[in-house]
View: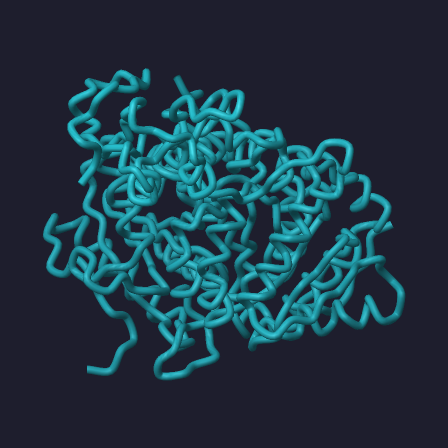
Amino acid sequence: MSEFKALDGTGAVAEAMRQINPDVVAAYPITPQTAVVQTFSEFVADGLVDTEFITVESEHSAMSACVGASAAGARVMTATSSAGLAFMWEILYVAASNRLPIVMTNVNRALSAPINIHCDHSDSMGARDAGWIHLFCENAQEAYDTLIQAVRIAEHPDLFLPVMVLFDGFITSHAEERVELFDEADVKAFVGEYKPRQSLLDLANPVTYGPLDFTDYYFEHKRQQVEAMRHAPKVILEVAEEFAKKFGKKYGLFETYRLDDAEVAIVVPSSTAGTTRPVVDKLRAEGLKVGLLKPRVFRPFPAKEMTDALRHVKVVGVMDRSVSFGAMDNTGPLFLELAAAMKIHGTASPIVDFVFGLGGRDIMPTQIEGVFRDLLQIAKTGQVKELVTYLGVRE
Amino acid sequence: MAKGWKDLPIGGMILEAGNSADYNTGAWRAFRPVRDVNLCTNCMFCWVFCPDSSIRVKDDKMVGFDLFHCKGCGICANICPVKCIEMQEESKFGGVAEEKDEPGLKGGAK
């Protein structure tokens, strides 16, 4: 029997971890992720899980311990945010390159400096080329559902790739919601038992993980990572389909809302998609054809699928909660990726970027309405005045 | 020919022990050791000092170099008390990995 609880995002994720019962969790506290591992450590102390909980002195060590435990054949999870993710940087690549299916919650938070504990996406966006799968979640329920799916995605034999589950710091991590927790036996049956590829502890079949890899083999191993990423969309959709059959909730590579006949659309992931939906309804009630595309899978980037979903749209507005300093016109990473995708996959519709919410700056429905009206204006005139707008910054 | 990406274990994992023997470190070589057999006294200094165990010995005699593994560091030539080993430019051997002792190198290495 599933049950409903009042939980914030961190609590929902900790409950998912309790039900998954991983072999090893190695973590270091950092706001706003702290409540994830703090709550989980209580489950460990109360004997509700069998997990070996490793307290470490830094995030670099946390991810290093995860790498070692995963190579030893354990099902491994951790959680971090912001500077914690940045401090893991080196080992993020080691985890992905050694093909270790570690599942990590990253509660999105701005990077220093100036120091800031609130939400933006600069932490995970900076790690976008590290070889991890990135899954954005809109709310606590999605975070719970996605963590459960992430285990199956990461451990799929065609992938063996680490997965980051992403949701917005404080907005999602610390706001209480009504969250449906599934029957624990059902969750355990869904994730199944982890079958490691080759365990370091399998003494009958000794192997070496992480050897020196020079000019003669390194490139081949990178090519293998590319191949795994190529398989990832299919695996993500298969796992989502099985999840829908078992738990009745549908997930895809992205979600659309009133997009089918939309003339203009906003593309925005995570909690801001939730803020955008009622704005779409309001403008639709005025007879304006506006719609929403909410990316879920950012890595691998579903370029063709997203372009196909937006093909009929006259103007696309991307909302980026981070900025790629020095990139084309100082836009954001989501814009850059989608603009390239639309060019490659053959749509000539204008696409513009709205960088918003850096350092947790609130994004209000009125501002999103303003974005839609800007997009409608571009649709009407065919003129793009500004490729990028920094929405909500004081001039 | 080394295997392509489809045939290699993923993640750089090594499944067999002792596979460093299969690693052709000889491909790194810029200078090749060539021995003057007439001068060599089989003192085995080269065998002791070679960091890559690339001195081949049979019946207590130095019989040549393992050019699959020799990186051409030149320690053997440097340590040889009779200077019977000369480091010669690898390019002049045209990629031929077969070693060749030369009776009567011109006075050995300087």
